[in-house]
Picture 1: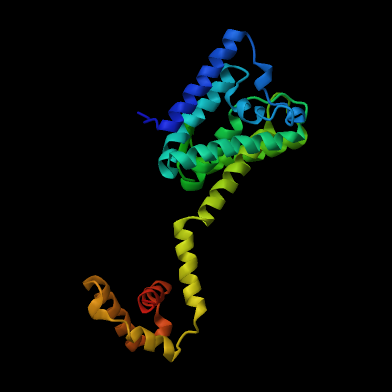
Picture 2: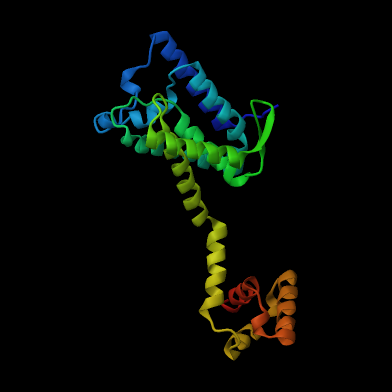
Length: 255
């Protein structure tokens, strides 16, 4: 049984509610439909178009993709980053739709395709069942959809917002790429690499500073690590140190 996460649940309910509103009105509320040529006079449509769908098959496909791919990605990213990815993907889908300026664009496809790309980024070899029969790795499915979006945008396929789909992929890629670049892990890696490059290896003054570290004032575990690293230097030289070991010595020698 698929366990729904908070934002996936909210998005499913919001899309279903708007579909019921559309049915009650007998058609799509034009004021909420994205027409790229009129985006400057109706800027809200870059957001509202994501929650409108042309028909039952349209909303069914998008919500099934969100249902199967969304929860695991939300658990991986956290709720805040997940909804950011979803909305950014939908907005870049709207941005890419400027290539079809007078088309009426509706649907969560751009945002949902962004979710699909996020999933394949972390679990590329996960298998999905095509027509519930044929197991295929999700990276091949997403690759096929990207190719179809490009070809459809270039050569035209009426009734499908190919550029919105492509924009969703691009938005998701850029968001996850920038998030990774500014993550704590990336900052730590940059610090370690900087420490490695900032001082020439093998200089006696480095070893003098490190040997002055007051091991008796350190936590026993840190003191044990200090002794191990200094023994390693005695046996193999400073050049044998890893970036992490140099960072450890630099951190305690700066105190």
